[in-house]
Length: 186
Image (cartoon, rainbow, N blue to C red; front, side):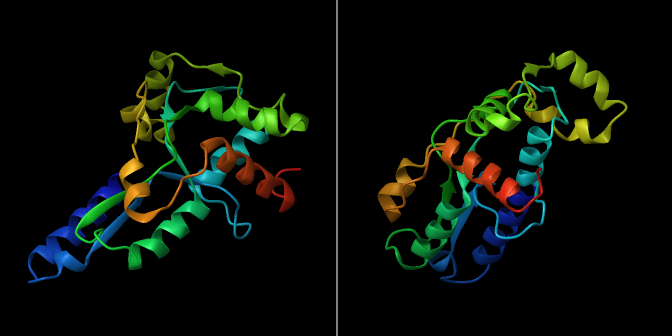
C-alpha cells in the first residue's frame, strides 16, 4: 500500500506542475487484486492463496483484506479511458466490504473441499504476531494492519463508469481454481 500511495502522490505532484494536465489524469487504485491468473507467476495475492491451499498456515493474523477481481480492474481501466467526468479523480477498485484472513481461508476451503483441511482454521492473538515480528521481518510488514478492518466504497466508481464489481468470494475462488489448474497447487 505504501508504494501505491507514493506512486499516486508523485503523479499528482507532476500534473500539478503542468497546466491542464490534471484534467487529463485519472488514477485507478485497486485494492488486493485476486481472480484468475494470467500465467504461473506467483504474485503477492496468489502467494496468499497458495500458502492457504497448501497448509502453510494453520492460523492467520487478525487482519482483513479488501479484494477486487482482476477482471474488474481491467474493465475499469478500459472504461476510465472513455468515461466522461472521471478525469482529475481517483477511482477505488474494490468489492464491497472486506474479508478477514480467516474468512478468505474458509472461502477457499468451501470452494475446494479437497483442500479444506489445509486452509487456516484459527486466528493468532495480536500479541503473538507482534512478538514474532521481532524475529521475522515478513511479520513486521503486516503490523500496521493488525486488527484493522478496512472498508472501501466503490459505489461512486460504478455510477461514473458502469463497472460493477464482483463479490470478493468469486475472485478468491477464481484465484484458487487458477492455482489448481496451473498445477501450482497439487
